[in-house]
Amino acid sequence: MECPGSRGNFNWWARWQAGGRDALLSRPRGRRTGEHQVLSEAEQAAVRQAVLDQTPCDLGLSGQLWTRRLIGELIFKLYRVRFTEPGVGKYLKRWGLTFQRPDKRAVEQDAEAVSLWCEETWPAIRARAKADNGEVLFGDQVGIRSDQVTGRTWGEQGRTPVIRRTGNRFSVNAMSAISTKGRMHFMVFTESFDAQVMCRFLARLVGHFDRKVHLIVDRHSAHRSKAVRAWLADHADEIELHFLPSYSPELNPDELVNSDLKRSLPHTHRARNQAELAAETRRFFQRRQRQPRIVRGYFGGRHVRYVLDE
Image (cartoon, one colour):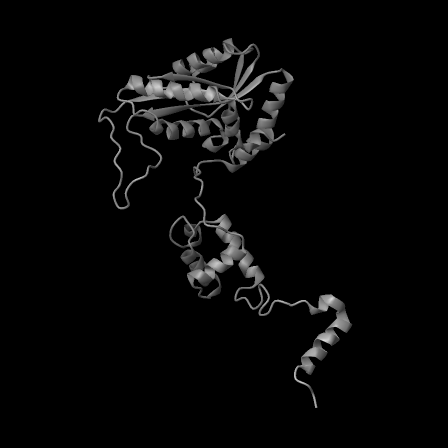
């Protein structure tokens, strides 16, 4: 007569004899990952690539941003298969996709010009500056308004906090330039930004260096004006301007300075007039000048790391 459990004992003993200790290790039960999926691997790859390369409206759906519902509609449109939103979510997780806030790009931006800048133009500028022992800086201008409130604050749930500010509207402007060495130069002014202001900033900038400056800026009309070109021609040994591709502010690390400025100002005393706003703006730049580590950190942004790549 067979003893209780003798068959089970024989099974493990047989496994031991066939494969040793490894044969006794427990194995996961149930379906293997990816087994018996409704969509084939090729179909999944096609949907994943469509989500990465296209917007919903490009594919005949509504909206600019992908949601699980819209991805489910895309799957039904392509393969006539219905999925619940949780079911779509499982595929998205398997594909390595996460829900993110998208970056914004101008439709006028030329992707080929951006690639050319990063792969050829910028390395050539850097090489020229290194050859003549020059200094490379990225510059940009920014406007700050009295009625601008950025950031968040704490408050009671259901009751929006109120920020008190003057009803008078006024603004100041600033021009700054930064280098990968942590240097920052700036000028705060109250008039509109034009060619005359640009020439004044350039004159102040070259006064800080005993070698040639290579300044990289966007294609603002003041940067390319006849007056600025004439001034540059008279100071060709001191400074040279280089222009970023059109509609590509994300390539300029000085844009991160502007964002930092607008985040920081609400945490200081709220200006009641233009003079106070100009003083607060000036204090921000002076503080950053004493913090070269932070200035160098602007070049660590996702879209401007190309500047540091050799």
